[in-house]
Amino acid sequence: MQRHLRDSKGNTVLHKVIKMAGNYADLLSTLKQMNPAYLRKTSCQYNLNGELPINVMQAIVDENNDVEVRAEDEVFHLLFNAMACDVEPLNKALDWESIKSEYQLKPGSQYHDEMKIACEIVNQVREINLASCTHPQLNGCPVSVMDEIEANIDKDRRVADRILYKLILDRKDIHFMTSIGHRSIELDASLSADEYEDLLETQARVFMQNRRADCGEFSTLIQYLLFKAGYQSDVVHIDNGDHSIVVLGRDPNSSTSDYKEWTNAIVIDAWEGSIYPASEIEKKLKNFEYFIRDNRNYACVVPFDPYYHELSVENYIQKKLHSRISLHPSKVTDQFLLEFKDDLSAREMYIFHEYIMPKLQKLIDDRTITLDELTALHSPRETLMHIFLEPEILDLIINKSHSLADIEYQKMNRFKFFELPRVANNFNATYSNERCSFF
Image 1 (tube, rainbow, N blue to C red):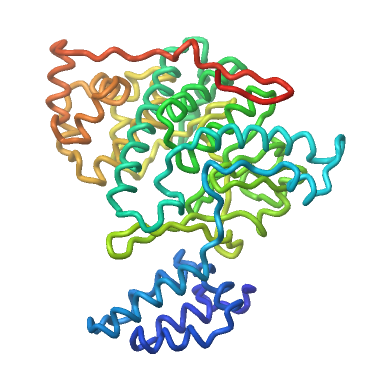
Image 2 (image 1 turned 30 degrees about the vertical axis):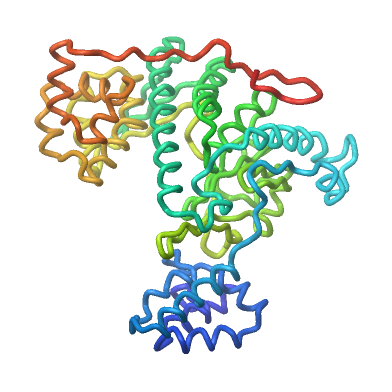
């Protein structure tokens, strides 16, 4: 649907039909009379609040009788099935011959070599049969099944982040340059090829060994293997959506947010199972959506909506590390950081701003810890570094078995320490003309 067919708030006709419905039975009758193609098109369009038509169902007053309960369930499944795109199983290989035929690829032609290596690497990752808590192949399973996988993936992410930033702390050959301006402090470090590879590997190793991954972890694995094969790529995220992909061949001088400038680049979506030119982003990119009905899991992917969605290159692991610290921050955690910034090296300040403070803010938002606990710390630098960079310590806080004061006391009094595992020497990726391999 074009922009002029939405109102000032981005609502489509379908949004309005659902909002104006008096009950589910009447809405069901109306939806069944709609043209199926029109229903499919409008069911996956977002308003400016980021709501799909299915998200505004709660505007209907539930009369809580048997007829309405059945009608509500039918409305949900009708809209869900209309907007959900087909997704291949996570372990199904991409068909290189079909890709080659679709884009008429011949050796030496545009995209041929990049798409071929991308296909080989995607298939290698999909052969692992990684468990994902977001993939539609779990649809209909009890929510507890998804929750267990999600909790394990979240733990994997914490481990990967801790090892990554511990590596940045320990690698003395990574040199940060500091520039102090009137309103901010700029921190920058350029990485050698070996340093960059080490940072990528710390992430890939955790997800590979535990065989669990959602779209972000799939993208990390693909980016790492592409680099080992000699290709530089970017992990790209839908900022106001929920999906990550890899873009190969983007001109480094192009905009990191305007995908229309990514000419000659290709998109690699290992989680969804697709490879295509970046010029087809508006046609082929998908966004992830998730619902719970009757304690059952319902996940789907819907088409990227250029009216609402925005893309950007993730500033996570790049060849240049950068951090901009505002000298007039709005977040309490950043204000807290400025209080002891003079005790930090540039390297430590980067780790605090990019890793520790965002995680700390989330713990405060989730009420896992309080601001009073934070400000009561006598040695915030040492205590927070210990919590976020030592194995298992953060889990003690998250599980609420220890408080910040407990951790500080144990740290300052040299109680039990945990050994930090080093990056395994035997985790390597090699590339030949035939395939990439982790081993």
